[in-house]
Image (tube, rainbow, N blue to C red; front, top):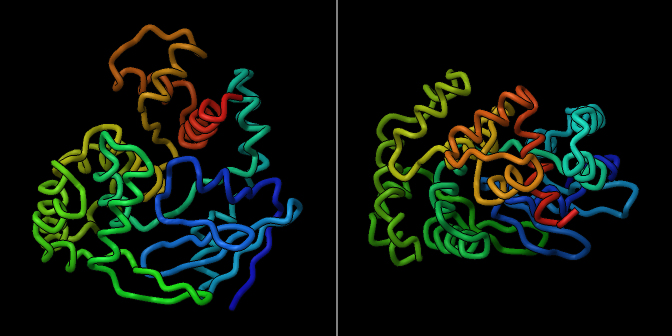
Length: 274
């Protein structure tokens, strides 16, 4: 077992896991068990240090983006002199963007479409339980995220029974397409090209594509726009646009290459009512 420690000021497990970018985690002991693909780790904090216990240190070091200096990102957020953003960056300085598995993010955010987080987590848990390899970590049995081969062979009826609703056909068609052509070509695209390509998959609209690009492909110049961001745009930025694509362009113009980080600070800060 490997144990990684990190300055808790810039790595808060709760803030990192609770901001809508990941759905596979659960409370455990003093912190959380976190699952990614077929791997698991235990993350917790004593207020001064945050610790990650795992069997694959390199994987989770990258997963939690621990090579990146978030002190500079926090200061950049404050430099915009926007009240909500400054308060959120200060209060949530330990919120980190994760580097998650690309295919898992494609399927997970298709499920997230017009859905709430508890229900998303339940659907993903049932899909993993039905199709994923059974594994164990720290005495806890868990199910790995299914391979695309398993998802492609499952059929739309399986996804319907897992509670996916109308998304059953989207998952079935997307899994079959990825099984046939892979996703390697997506990794070579810039952010705009990637977003456009992702929107070619069944069930992937602009917001879902931005989430996949940000949380799966590490395109930090992405800015997903949902109802929370629309609320922020109106209430904290005095915006009058109603088209989400134009609201997205507004924020991209404001934040540029830092858009993904700023989106998470704004989103989570508003949810916490800072």
